Image 1: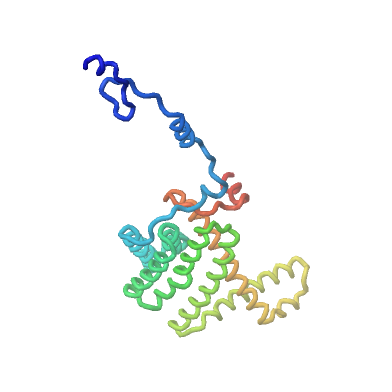
Image 2 (image 1 turned 90 degrees about the vertical axis):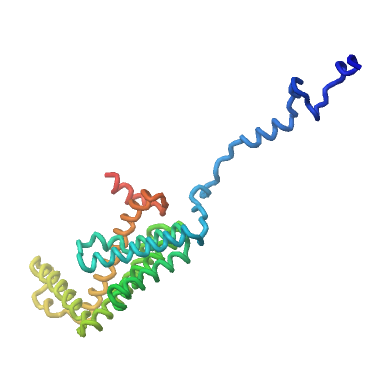
Length: 265
């Protein structure tokens, strides 16, 4: 019996204590090599935004926090205006909500900010925030999330901000009881007269041309002033967002090469 037990071959299916380890199967090496095989990431795959769950406590808490932050920025700028610095980041909290939690959370943040400002400052001033800055934050977040270039996002944002300017002008004229468009027309008239006077002093125009500016030209110049100011504002918002979002761990489309060269110099 002892000899038969000692001469028994070890069963690989049921190894005993002290038995030598069986040699690995060749298929196991193939499996390990295929697991460790490095496959480079396809182009555009690394730039694809990470998917987060758009519902849950984290999304709700962060959306509420950023909505209150947007309202607080607007409130501080209304009562203690530090200049154009805070105006640059008006749409940024809503855009950040879109980048992190999607369109549903961004619309909720814009509406919550508007309702909070309606309680604190009244419905008219809350509408001044919603149009254009609340909608602008949703629009910028939507374009940045999809990787749109700066030219597209700045162009669409300029149109939206210009429309918001005229809505704001109408609301303020309604609250003050005065037509503020006349004030803008007067500013455009002064600008046209200044340009014409400089051209006359250089001898490029005659003196009689100073009285030839018509109302259509003045309104076109006023509209051009609004569009150019909106264009400069959107470009500044993109620069500030590109610098801030990078530090917050969120990606937005890179600026054009000429902008990067300006920032590097």
